[in-house]
Amino acid sequence: MNKPLREVNAETLFQLAMRRWDLIVLLPLLTLLGAGIAWRVLPTKYESTARLLIPEQQTVNPFMKEMVEEWSVVQRMPLVESVFLSHDTSEQVLRRLGRLEPSSSAKEVNDAVMEFQGSFDAIPLGGELVLIKVRGKTPDEAYDAARALIETFTERIMRPQRETVRASSLFFEEQLKQLRGNNPEVSPSLGELQEEGKGPIEAESNLRRALAEAEARLARVSYEVKRSQEALSQPSPGESELRKQLSSARRRLYRLEQRYGDRHPELATAKLRVRELQRAVKREQEGAYDVLAKSEETAGTAGEPKTAASEAARHQTLLLELREAMAEVELLRNQLLTKTLSTFGDGKVWQVEAPVLPTQPLGPPFWLVLLAALLAGIVLALLAVAFFAAFDDSMRSERELADAIGAPSFGRMPRGEA
Amino acid sequence: MSKSSEVRRAEHSLVARAFHIVQAANARRILLVSPHDGDGKSRFARCIQEYASAVTEEPCQVLSRSSVRVPLEPMERGYFWVDGVSLLEGEGAAVLFPAVRASFDGAVLIARGMVTTRKELAACAAQLRDLDMPVLGGVWNAIESPTPAQMARAFRQGLLRWPPQLPPGALARQFRRSS
Image (cartoon, rainbow over all chains, first blue to last red; front, side):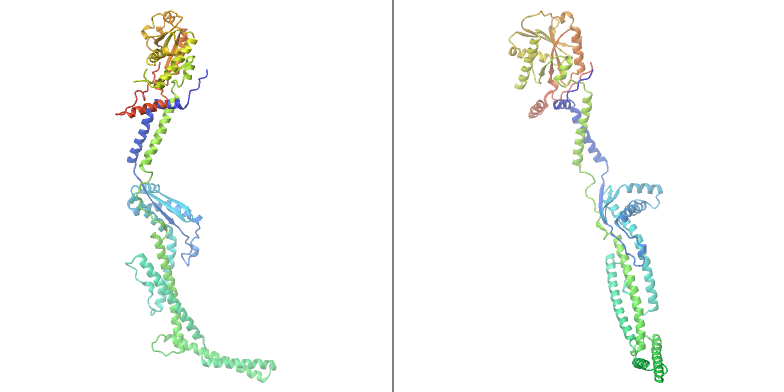
């Protein structure tokens, strides 16, 4: 025998709900109470956020270009994420924050690192931007952890570039030292400015000023060397006369060759004349070189008359100065690059949005939690009512009454005193 | 507490329909039965007493529960409504031994909406069938199943008082023990 279907309509549902009014009142109250207790008991968390821009660094080292990996966004982002999520990064951050003692055991370090790695996220925002979210139990904790994480990350990701730049700086310093050892009379470089006790910004501006002055000096020395070269390349009066005679003799020889045969006596005389003049020019040049060589020993003597020898010696000095100026400019450029990279490390260039000290705890406001708990309680209560109604056999309508007794229903006797 | 006009209209309608049905069944001696005490037999009997003169010109008498065992002779005119027997409590249907059973033409079953179970109703109907007592009809007692409008009205009336109070029975709830 088939069981008749139960009556379900709006009024029936209302009646069922009213008959379980205790559940409808009690469950929302309980959920409200639970939410309030959870709000009080569960630790409040704060979140500090920062945005980092990680631009391409392709030519940080002029000598070791091939050692610097060409970074594209596709290659860079996995590297950035791996640096953030690496065990070493987290361990360094924790040590920097003082949350790990030097004597901590490997297990303690591992546990602390695992816990810390669960408290921050590095989210690529597309392009070269990365969003950092660091959570902590207090605003200061979150803020300090965010700063330490960014500093550690920057140090780690910039380490290869710094190493190559440092190596090239050492090379230029060595070269400059050698040059100054060969020519001790050259004035000290402006690049040797004392930077101790000055801030990074002042140090960098000093470095930039020194570089500008070194470049100006290089330009001046280059110009002087060029002029000196031009002056030295001009022949002496005697040599000029000989060269004129030589060219005249060659012209005459050419004409005679056109006019006579090889055995003509005038032709032989002309050839002899040309050879003599060539030897004379050569002797004149060799004499000038001897003078130049002797001038190197006496170069730089004060009050010396301006002779060809002194000009040659001055040219040699200028060449030395030119090499030293070039080495100094390169050294200063490397120092500036090193300084710029360390400035990145201080977080003044890469941090599009610096870590902010959170003022509001993480999560929704208290009133929203209570509202959600109330709604959840009501839904829970309705589910409980539905559950009990499923097992409730009570008569729900006049039709069910008529069906049960096999006779018509007279009607509904209303509420109210008789 | 005076009844509202709405309640009066509903009760009048109920009594009129009851007389119409028993008249159609040619029943003059009617026994009110219910599964349990407090299911509304006495209240329905009071409704009959109050509205009978308005719905029929024939004489009508409502007898109390103590009159169940008093034999009633067959009659040509008028109605006897006897309040009544709780079939699932105390002696139950045993009260209706053949002499008593012969005093009635039929029974009307009073049940509390949202409280009386279908199982109880089926048990009562089976007992009456065993006694060969015709079931003339049933009455839905809405004492514990007010409509939303009735509930809202009751709350409003209660809250308008000082001190505010819930209307009696507004949140009353009674679950039948298993019979």
